[in-house]
Length: 267
Picture 1 (cartoon, rainbow, N blue to C red):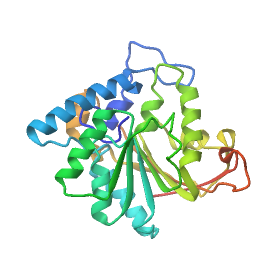
Picture 2: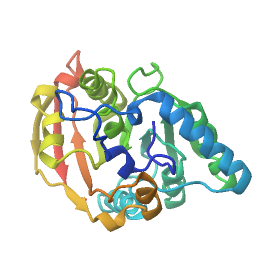
Picture 3: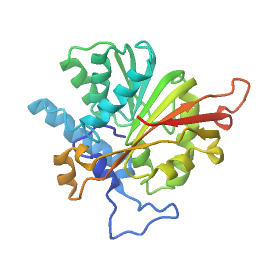
């Protein structure tokens, strides 16, 4: 699944087909929510990189990426904090984090070609402190846990479009998040499919959160999205919603996802 791609932009993930009908959750099922789509995307992207050295677009635009890094700087996130990029795509965001000084960075993607592409991009930049793993966030290995920061730039959007029971997959996403995020860790999510209210509902008491305080999510201007990606999708760029969740798990709880607290702050 992707967070940085030329073949599948944030605007593209938001594109809904007029030929299909929305499911009970309001989303039109789409190939953009399937592994087969992203495998094909990253096979092409990997070949393009090998031939031309083109890393592809930055998901939701460079400003979206910089905004998250500025938030981490503002809140004095230690440079040795463990960071997980969920659906890393071409790994460009990992590179920026490493250049900023973060030293414990992991990128996961369920597409092996995406991880190969990320590895090639990271090698080209001469970086060695970034870990990459082929991982399906909905079916995690036991080794993945204990991250101070988890970042999602489009993966939750794509899951929401999966033709095969997207609602249950979103619930599994929340459970996986509860597994990998450290006590009092932060979850940074960027979305252009969900409104603030809808995201608050997805990450609420009903999904295992105790409360959401200091609600405040910031919309990025549509001009912040990569122009070429939006044009290739054939649609007007959507607005991107950036939210920060402060997740505090109860150490005594046998099921951490049922004892979450969350604070949303404006980036």
